[in-house]
Image (tube, rainbow, N blue to C red; front, side, top):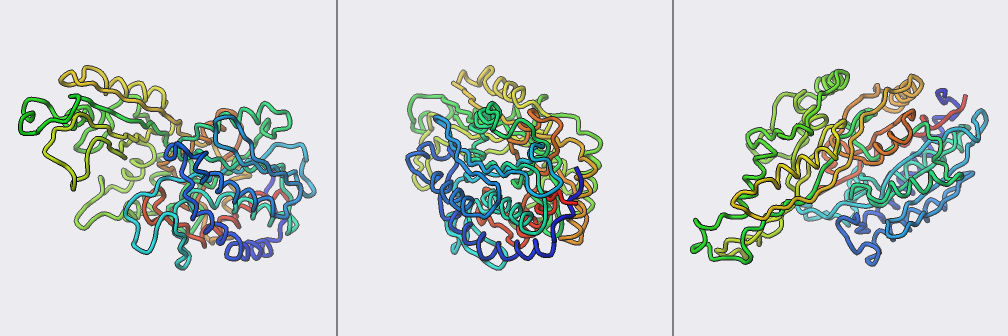
Length: 481
């Protein structure tokens, strides 16, 4: 491969600069208004139709774009969410029409609403304030399909060339991508599917540590999540009569959690969830920590007087990228405080979300976690943990041509060199493609920067940054000479 120099970058930037405010922002506002929850949060997604509406919106827009050599279709598999696919033939001189494919990936399913939104905002209420487009899903990851095709169109319209391209937009990523492997297998089995030879994967579903340069994601943590349920009695009992005789199911949960997490510092106690961090990743984290300083944790909206788990910048960066962490994301069995009586409750169910290092084996972690929680239950209580895991990802070494192209694009667009960082989230598709195409290169980046608050209240897309990222994408896709 070579660094693309065929496009007229000034004209490409002009076209992209027009497309974002006039076309992409209005389409994203329509998309944000759709409560297209991922299947894990909307079991009746097919009947409710919100995911279908979101897919319709994006598919109709993709079909309307004047991209040469593009075929758009919706792949349907029984019992699974659809996969939206756009295949674009190689374009321009100097590229092999039968050469390897570049895959561009995104998703359009969303996380639940979450509480805490500003009074004038809401998850399904798109609001544009300056450069911030508020609402669920715009930054994670609805913009990806629009940015990808806009960049491709800019390459074609400004004298550039590109290899065969495949845009994949899934609808189950926020559920751990349970449907995507079947879709990829179906496409790989088809001689005309376009996934038999992939040499570059571009994913726009990641983050950035600042909004003033390009941040390339070099690793992603994996995830083991599930529900821990403790039952101790068959019905609620008066706390005055049962308290002191029957143990609280919540106290039993606390005892079990002490087996897997040290409460004093949050350390995960499972051997399978702790790995040796590669030296080059420590070096990257050190550079990030030195660059960001207190910005490593200042973006967190801590209440007055609160402090982060560590004040050491490097420790904080490694803590969110290469060390395991446990979060408690939901609870059942507890009434609200306004309706809680003096009752010893029969059961407690807790949702656990354990982020694991990029190279940890999610299957091994899930087995050790299950055994630690279920073995020898306190007081003979009935304890059950049901979980599933998703692998993390550790990027292969960046090819020199790609590193030069990305850094040159960052300097051109931002006036700053590209930066490298690990991310704490999980994108199961990356691990899947990494195994299937071990020789492929990866460009993982995104718009989830300081304050953007993906999955939380007041989530926003920084439109100015997304526009610049689209300009960089056009430069990287170009194979002109």
